[in-house]
Image (cartoon, rainbow, N blue to C red; front, side):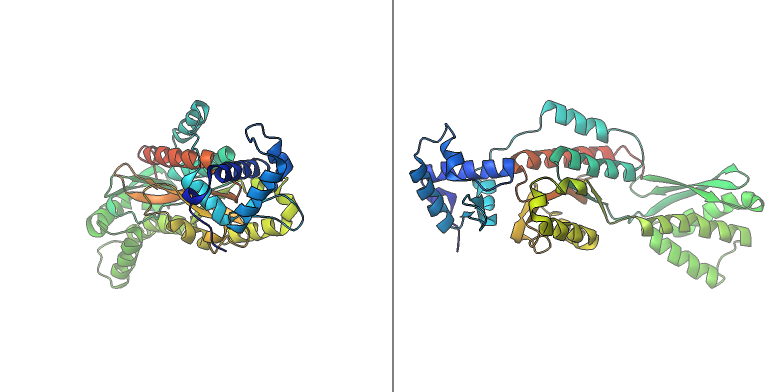
Length: 350
C-alpha cells in the first residue's frame, strides 16, 4: 500500500489527517471518530469522519490497531506530516536561555558533550544522544611542566590551536629530564596525530636512533601514552535519558521498548546511523521503518551535525524516541542546540 502526496488530499481529508496526527503525538493512543467529532474545529458528523478515516487508511496514511477502533498515523503518514504539514514551534525564550546557559559553562569538551546529551533528553522528553568528535589532533607543541616531585603537567598544543592538559606521574629523579623530553617531542614528532607520534616514537627508541637517556625516554612514553589511553576509553556515543522511553504509553508495548533499549546498547550501530546526518545541511529525521536499526522498535531519530567555529562538522547530536515525538518542537530545538554547542566548543578545552 503506497501513500499519496499531501497535495492530492482534499482539504477535509488534510484537516482530519492533521488532527489525528496531532492528537496521536499528544496522547500516544489511537484516535477515534468520537474524539474527532468532539473537536469544535471539525464541523463534520461522526459518519463523515469515519468515512474520511477509512479513505486515509486505504491511502496508507493511517492504520487501525487490532485492539482499537481508533486510527494512528503510519510511518509514511508521519513522513508526509513532517515534510508538508508540520507547523514548527520555535524554542521559547526560556528554552533558549536554558540551552545557552548550560552550554556556556567552562570546562573540558567531554563535560560539554555530557551536558548536551542530558539537555536534549530533558527538553525533548526522549533520550538525548551526542556523537563525540574523533580525536585526530595533530601535535604542534608539547611541554612537561613540573607540579611537584612526583607529578608533572603534560601540555599538548594542536595545530588548530587547541590545548590539552593531563597530569603525568613521574619519578623524583626524572625532574631534570622534563625539558629534554618536551623538546624531543616538539622537535621530532610535530605534525603527526597522537597515534602516529606514539608509533614513530616507539620505532625510534627501539631502533636506538634517539639520544635520550632512560629518564627522558620514560617521560616521552608517559607523556604521549596518557592521551592514547584516554582516547581509547572515550565512548563513541553519549546517550542520556533512556528512562524517558519508559513512559505510560510505552508500557503498553513493553516488547517494543525492550527492543529499543537493546538497540541503544549497540552504540557503534547508533553512531553509524547518526553518521548519515553528518553531511546534512539541516536536521534530519528518520521515522520508524525508514531506518533499519530502530525500525523494529517503532522509533524515530532526529539528528543534526554540529560544527566548530570554522564551520567544519565535528560530530552529530540528536534524540531518539517513539514515532510520536513532537517533531514540530524537537526539530528546531535540536537545530538550536547544535549551533550553541558549536559556539561553545570554540571556548572550551579538549
